[in-house]
Length: 295
Image (cartoon, rainbow, N blue to C red; front, top):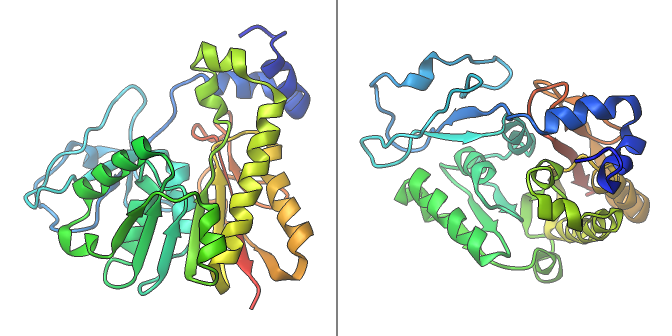
């Protein structure tokens, strides 16, 4: 991409002196972890990933060395043993602080890595609705659940295909906690796709921000009073991140309050949440904020 491309110029204006390093980092291979599947029967045989680095702040995750892959293997109960994902995604899912007995909604759930973390959190009791509007993404989500979640737990996992806004309209005050990993620009993927680069414009970000706000407002309706929402995107655009939270706080006022967000490993605080940026953390990009519906 040329420095005169509208994409480059736009984010150069947003990030200033930081942009060249961030732009370069977005085009590098992202750091990933192999997160252990804690559902079902745990095998005692040694696995290659057990030699990878671990970090106290991210238990159950093994950091895959640069240039080295990690492939899930079948256990004796036929479930896969690890799920490879961005470490920031693990921290986002855990920020929901799901508890046994909770009724959860993962509003835009595919491909399913975050859903697996939430399912583990309520495995003994409670239920979760894993929703995705896209039929193709939903099929991938179903496959992930079948590969990682034992049948006795799957009985309390529901895969649905609604527009997320419908949860706010038809299921008000229904869920204890909601994860909204909203559809976003995904700038890392744009840089991998010349066609997407040709189609990009600042207006696309504006349209997505409007959609993200409508989903977040719906989540606020659907969560119970006192319930928690984690809003996240894989965008580097403030318009899709802090600006969406700012709009919610301004419009809903006393109906919602912002909760502290733990940066965890490699996170940096923003005005309302936490961002993981590849130029500083080596993974991401990923943004999240935590809000609570007032009693």
